[in-house]
Amino acid sequence: QVQLVESGGGLVQAGGSLRLSCAASGSIFISRSHMGWYRQAPGKQRELVASISRIGNTNYVDSVKGRFTISRDLAMNTMYLQINNLKPEDTAVYYCNLYPQSPSVNWGQGTQVTVSS
Image 1 (cartoon, rainbow, N blue to C red):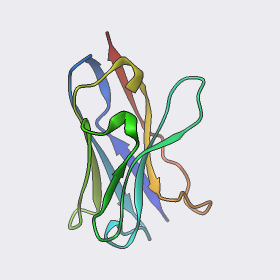
Image 2: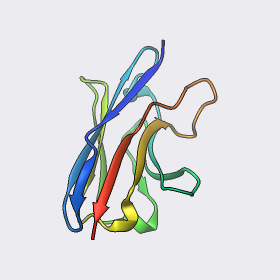
Image 3: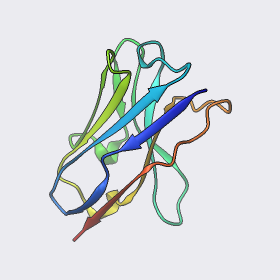
């Protein structure tokens, strides 16, 4: 059974930092997968914010460049998203999944990030 479990969110003030974690289990091996962090803000569609390829190449959307860092621990089969200098517009539920997202892999429950101004 494929499972992705996100954690690490919380309520922080603008300018603060968080480190999100994505623990993968089942048939997903982060070392063999192109993975992504996504977020969905209230009333908006889910969007990809960062991705990391099988060989470790990373990409970010312009709005998070310089503030977000995607990384992974292959031994732990876990992916991370370090978020610095948080802004109120970063408020969203953050999810991890394959990139592109596969219909055969369900979304996890996500982790809520709320940034107060």
